Length: 89
Image (tube, rainbow, N blue to C red):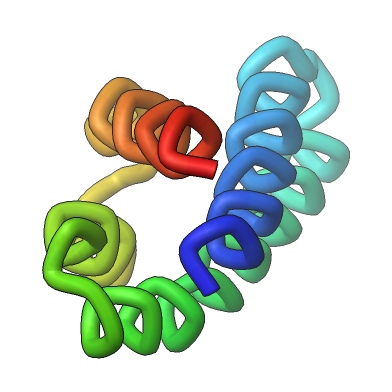
C-alpha cells in the first residue's frame, strides 16, 4: 500500500511542479487541483500501509496534512518518505 500511495504522491508532486511554472492562472489552477486530488487519493493508501506496518506512520501523517497544509511545505518530507518506500522494496 505504501508504494501505491507513493505513486499518487509522486504524480502530485509532478503536477504541482508543473503548476508553479505556469503563467496562465487557469492552467495553474487546473494543475494545482489535479495535484491536490492525487495527494488526497494517497491518504487512505498511506493510512492502510501505516496500519499494517508502523514504518509508514510518518508517510501517513505527512500526506494527511495535505488537507490543511499547502503542498509546497510537504514536498521535501513526502519525497524523503517515498524514497524510503522505494528503498524498502
